[in-house]
Amino acid sequence: MDQRKIGVFLKTLRKEKNITQEQLAEKMGVSNRSVSRWETGANLPDLDILMQLADYYSVELREILDGERRTQNMDPEMEETVLKVADYSNQEKLRLTRRLHWLFLAAIGALMLAFLVSFWELTGPFFDFLSGMGQGVALGMLIVGALFTSRYGAKIRNFKRRLLGKGELKIDN
Image (tube, rainbow, N blue to C red; front, top):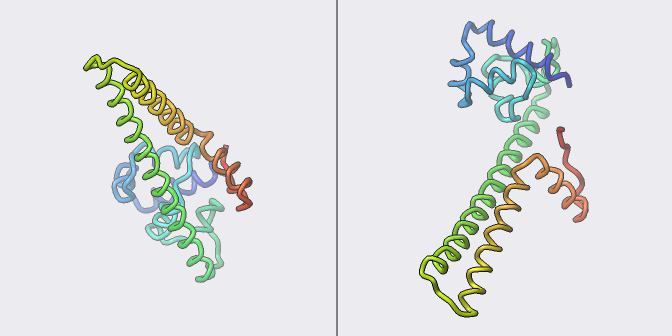
């Protein structure tokens, strides 16, 4: 898959519709910068947005992914499968985002606990333990959250899937 070729094709399709990057961004619910990155080949849209673009431009997803027009139509079953994959992908992203939100909320709560113990100058072995635990939990959760939101997150998830015997997901570097 040639991202630059896809970008040129997306730009051609947009020009054929006589709309600006800003107008397309508004229709797709993304930023102007995202559209620019798609058209330069720096990034590709998510699968669900690719499906929206295919509908909007009245082309098939396969044509966008190939970066050129095709004369053959996509099999309706294949299109339905692609839509299901896009929906599954979105659900996975949403589930991961929810987990990360809870992780960060727990980290903030633990940090607040440690702060309150220090602020009220509570002393004793229990409060020292509580403060240290709060700081440690907060730091640990923030590190794990940062790892999973970085580019290494997909590699970590694939390693986990391999360990559990669920197969590996494709990672774009």
